[in-house]
Amino acid sequence: MKGLVVHPVTPDRWDHLEGLFGPSGAYGNCWCTWWVLPAKVWDGTAPEARRAILRRLVDEGAEPGLLAYLDGEPVGWCAVGPRERYARMMSPRSRTFRPLDDDPSWVINCFFIARSARGRGVARALLAAAVDYAFAHGAERIDAYPIDPAAQAPTSANLFVGYLPAFLAAGFAEVARMGNRPVVRLARPVAPQ
Image (cartoon, rainbow, N blue to C red; front, top):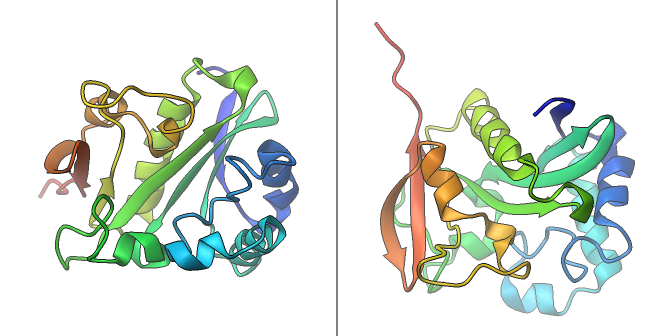
């Protein structure tokens, strides 16, 4: 997409992320900490504390996600990182988001696109950039748990995890189902010898 660039969220980009998320902190004041905190902890954490958790990750150099800019304005976010960062995704008790095995992996687990930029390819660009970012930072494989439109109607409330057809188009393969939720995986490409 012409005019679209993607950058990791670094401390100098915090104000851009905060502006994109707005006063509601992305989805319902989650501040993209829904994955980072165990369920009971998240439920008991105030929105301002969630914001502070994400800010701390950024300030500590974790680069917890990517920002998409369209003509210089932040219009999209994608969370990407090692599975270990996301307490909610590490629990073997989770019915939907548990790890399939013990092999280390990275995950792409959240998208937030500004209303003004939806339907313009921002999420696809963020997905491609997240794949490149993960592999450049040592990931051997990347997992995701997107919505399958054939099994669950996509809504603005559940598409934050991504859209199965977009992941399949990006080269991911479905490797399991947890209920009606697909688990998709992309392995690091093997370098030619």
